[in-house]
Image (tube, rainbow, N blue to C red; front, side, top):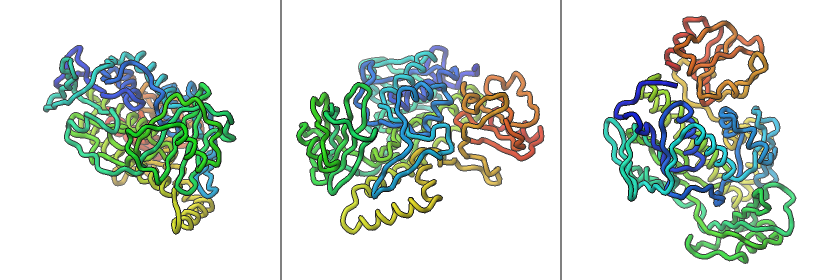
Length: 483
């Protein structure tokens, strides 16, 4: 894509600086570079993919976003799918009927996701600068200046902070991070097991103890465990006996844990920034919201933040959209972050229920098991496919909804057509996008006789739809949304 440089930028200067190279930052940077936007990633760590991640699953919506970038099938070959989520009181959520190509949860460590996202970003031309610790930033009407410890200041049109819950970017723009510690003294360990668990993901809560086991691809298992009565500071050392004891209390056995290669302690917070944007600075992923690991929604939510923001930044920087488009990042993603925070917290509290809370939990499990609408809502929130974005008054009922991977004429798929960061117009009638839109619009035909015309955004949500739409209506919609 080519476009007119944004105000305040010059040739050779990054038009976007991304601070932090976790999954959120990598997806965002790769998208921008693929769209022809010069982007620099600043990371305070040396260049290495860490295996100290707490994320172990990809849900359906995140997999759909990765499919739109040609990466999902590669990760599917590495990970292991499970089609049932076991929660509490015998409640199981069956994902087999999920309206997605990915009707399962894919179990794989976060570093596998980071590998493919980093490779894509490098191939797209992202400028990576490791050992670059950001100490602050200042912004004006034309751009943002980023201050780096021991190095020269860097300048960009926009900055995105994907630098985690202790975000320097968030602090630099003066945003608070209200919330609280939901779970204290959570213990992490990577261990070998003498006995292999019966299920791929193993989790249970009994009394005051909770434990979770997930496999790496090298024979080790990640253990995450917590005991309600053991509230000690994060810096307190962990030994294998403590890990075994909590695991035995929660799971009934410790599976013969031995040869721990790494152990640590942390606390899990529930926090959300009141705004994801201050001027030319944005927050995404854990810099914008953190919550308990219940449901495995953290990395997945961050990836969807990046998918929402990247195409909007590219459209504005190329001059195809007005800067006001960037305001929709807040209105669309902040409510999702708030819902994830609440739902993950509810799962933890229900899993650790005791006393009078147990009958309430049992009643809720029964309701979810027997009421299809409630079950669909729970599955939609956990997997990410149930969210929709606000639509203007009077808009078509599909506007703002996620589009599943539809079959298109000629044996194609929608998410293949989305590759390249383009809008996709799905229509029955003929339409020539012309050379002026060829770099940002793909036209596809319905594989069926459906008469609805749908304009799909690069992130897979409906921008506009119309029944039996005539050419002038389609042209107006394209002018509004595609430019």
